[in-house]
Length: 445
Image (cartoon, rainbow, N blue to C red; front, side, top):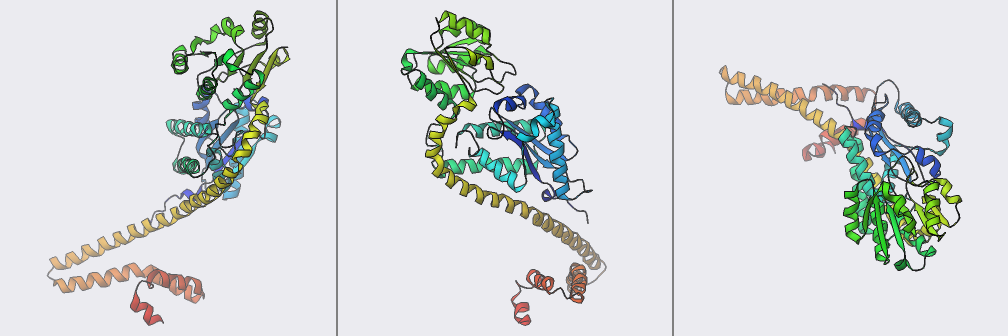
């Protein structure tokens, strides 16, 4: 009888770094741009030890979710270590770095820890801002992208879908998302500390993605006087600008408008800085050195680090938002504890689903074997009828032959088990074959 491949022979591994393990200088060097993500995930899935792969790359984390490929020549633990080593080497080489620059910032999780980590990430428990909802959408994008590239298989796909379901449960059953907390919210809160009255200020928003939209929403709710949306695609920028009564411009127009901006919040996927020191210096001269607040929440950074050296510029990156964020974290800790309890239960549910896979495959194999035997014996009984045997004789043959054929191998194994005094297996066999038969149970007693 042919054997089937079990998903349990694969292991889920996660390799990554985040805002807790690496500074922005390292994170931006290991980030994947939208342009290279397709080639990256296909290249990752092509590694010898890897079967399935997905890449989650955000401003605060880069994570590689993979399942190992069962090669059959080494044990599971060795295979996992081999896979983690290969993925680590691949990550550093893909970005043109060496192991010494990266390894100290990386974390690796294997199977159960990978499952738990994925659920925590989806629920926002591993985010810079506890419980922030944006990461769930980013995980869904990573899932969809891996699907498009054909690198999302059965086990990894089940994990991501499970993570999405758990995140929804946590949002429904806890208060984790009750406060308007996000990187965008923190950026706007910080701008309020620089400028008391936003209704007198002009904000320049660079980008038109989810983070910028959220920041624009918070600014609009704080009665910002004027908003300008700068984006590579002016049409996309105009769609966002229309929501808030803002203006839309192209990225090359920024130098013409920068001096008008009291607040600059930038979050693009550009691999190179959008704003250099020279452009900001020129803007400050036109502003007669009136203070300018800049919050660069992009990874890689949109604003050159040297801009921070300029007088009259308050430049913050995502790593500078910790203090504001900490105040909001405290209000979410109780909800986070409830979320962690839900996650632990859901980790067990996922592992139970995995364990059930082997039994499903065994049941299928047993049924296929029994159906093959039944077809063979039925054909012989029908042949007896065609040769003149009475229906009673043919039915008696069918019952006897079917019983003998089905029980031949189990009986032989049980006799050997008895000779070896394996009473545990004998008791198990009784439960399998006799427990549902009252007469047999009564006789045994």
